[in-house]
Amino acid sequence: MKRLAAIFLAVFLQGLLLLAPAQVDSTALKALDMRLDEYFRTMETESSAFKGGECDTLIASAGSEELRRHIALKAYYHYVDSKLMGDETVAVHLADRWLLSGEIAVDEADLFSARLYTELNRATLIGCKAPSLALRTPDGGEYSLNLASDRRSVICFYDTQCSRCKLETLVLKSLMEDMDYPVTIFAIYTGDNEEEWRSWMDTRFSYAASSVKVVNLWDPYDESGFASKYGVMQTPKMFLVDRDGTILGRGLDTDALRQLLDALISAEYYEYGSDESNALMDRVFEACGPELAPSDVLETATLIAQKTLDLGDTLNFKHLCGDLLYYLSNRRGEAFKEGTVPFLNEYVLGRPDIWSSSDDSLRVVGMASLMKDLLSRTPVGSRLPKGLVGVRMPKKMASDWKKIYRKGGCILFHTSGCPYCEQEKLAAKALGVRCLDIDVDSLGEVSPELASAFLDTFDLSTLPFIVQVGRRGIVLRRYLTLL
Image (cartoon, rainbow, N blue to C red; front, top):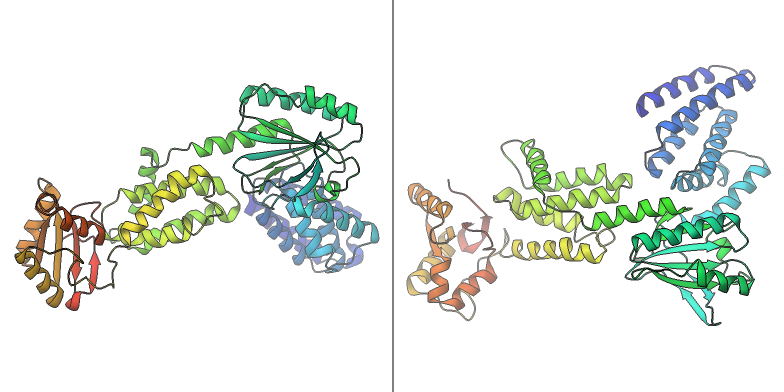
């Protein structure tokens, strides 16, 4: 639908461009505005970056200065007036790119509007770090509002004389007492009537909820600059801030705040590696064909990022990326195993900005670190140790180990009673492969120190484990199957 709308709009623009500038009259511009309104509606669910890019393309496609100015101002004011959270980012982008840069000439009124709008909104766009403020506490002390903490924060600017504030604070109190969200509410009074302020503290910002924490603050003379830093031209104005101080929501009412908090909390309890997600990953990798390569793992993760993270959908990225992590933790085979570490480095361990909550650390980052540690033991291209430091091998094993080291061959770690292990041993014998068999269970009973040394040197989390060694002990391949 969006692509068809874009084509339709482009064709309409081309029709206008065929006319002489004098012929682009009010009737033609009115028709253009109708097409633009239709196109803006088709883009409502897209990311801010996508909307901004599309608007840039439309403005640049207009051949005359008059049309570029008209489309730029139409788009800018559309996103200024939009009620959709996040569209402020598009308005600021358009102001910077086309109006304030002088790329197109606009009158002083439009230029003033763009300057004022960007000044009041730039610092508190979604994804920005919430500005710090120096405020006053009810006892007259100083309070530095720094929103990076172990809890999410709600900033609520209000005025006791504001009729909407009177309603919104009552609805907010009801929500917090019903849901008892684990958040800190910074209730910031923007007026100067201390008596009314204290009355609201005792009534509207006093919650019967064990998890909700309220911090009452004020700045009657705006010495902190909160009005300009947070764009507080009217009240109420409410923001939701993540634990790392990043703004997640702005211009919220209580219902929008509830939706955001419910989505965030449900995301934290998302079940990674469910049967449904594993079935989905099976289908994804089956589509790679019978000869799965290690690079297919990273390419799959990159595709997930392009369809989610690159479009601003962090939540779905975390769900799908976490599902992939759990899926890989249970996969056998060389391609899956060797392809996991690049994926971990780029999309899990390499993105602390995404995996930043305590739940992420526990269920995702911790698992990824453990997997990387195991998978990084004696990697391809490294040299097999001539012996295990501080531990003596049995005479026969030591002799076979030296032969493998000098001439090459395979080391097959297995366990008693494992049908997969037995099949691999039979395959090695049938193929005539020079192979050193090591029964991990039996070795653990005879020589626990040697078994422990092997566990520290190789990834023996899943057996059988077969490593192919070239001459002079170079590790050529791991996680092989000889079947």
